[in-house]
Image (cartoon, rainbow, N blue to C red; front, side, top):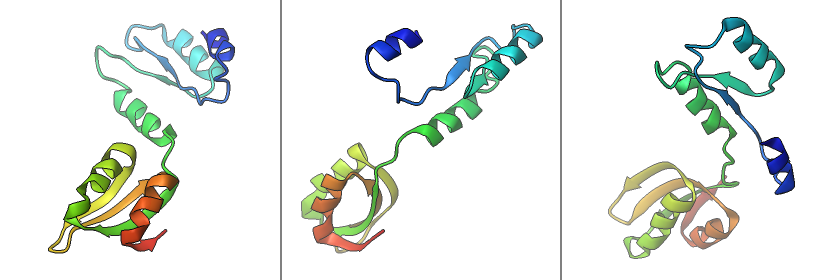
Length: 122
């Protein structure tokens, strides 16, 4: 599997090794695998053990958009709010009489488009 990753040029992509069937595995073998594999986690799909930890680890490892922006987006520009939801990470959102008060982490291109309505950039 790692050869395929190297072959497609994805060697710089972070890896999480997930060892399933932790409930049925020999504890000594499981400990050896966890010791030998960097960035590894043991889970059991049957019992659910380790699943919450795996989801938290994936969330930590996912790349985040680089720009945090706070903007008051007029309702006539709802497409920008939709793009922030689809392409970014929403920190907070409040509907006011003037428009959508949005705090979000977005990529630079979308931040530039939202900057017209920015209250403060972080």
